[in-house]
Length: 305
View (cartoon, rainbow, N blue to C red):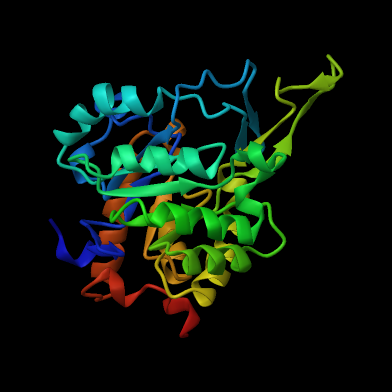
């Protein structure tokens, strides 16, 4: 383990700052033939709900300029099957495991957290707060600061694990959301989630996605993500994790210089499954060639120049 790459998210120590983004790496096993899983900073698994979800009908993925739209619909095996079928494999991988969770109500989030918190091999929880809150008339947790604060406060009481909150970019002021979840007890924030978008088939004269709208990810959203990470790093005292269009080590370094203590790689995993390994190597070489002894020396450094 290279000590210069070590970073922290609350009480969670990571061997390096490179993690896989939820929904882009399955439950880990899907990539074992392509990636040295033991070397990853952490795996963030596909979002887990209280009960299994079939997801949206196809078509639910479409390629766009410099990115992709997805409307998977949070398809997953549910918490019971995750614990029984997926977690045993991850325990043997000698890798930090962060479980991304989602729910339609505060009660669902709390129930999932209670079932995960005492399980060996789970190192942190990431709250996806972009899901519809059906008990509040469909308002998303991730776009209402008071609702987000309440959710995080309630979940915080259910676990001692590090709690990361994944923020939506589809808001007027992302710093307001970041401060709300920090006040609620979050140990860190990760951002950004996908931007809402759509595509139209000009020959069928209809939306391409069966769901009509989907989440835009990939290189196209990097400038937006970088700007939001910069803003949030100034707005909160807790660690910030950067996500959005990170495809190479230079992208990762940009996010770290902007204030991120760690990053997540998402869409790039589909294009090149070895992206995370390459980014880890690149960051290490960048630090060495610039005579830095630790990654901590460059976190937010662009703000100080």
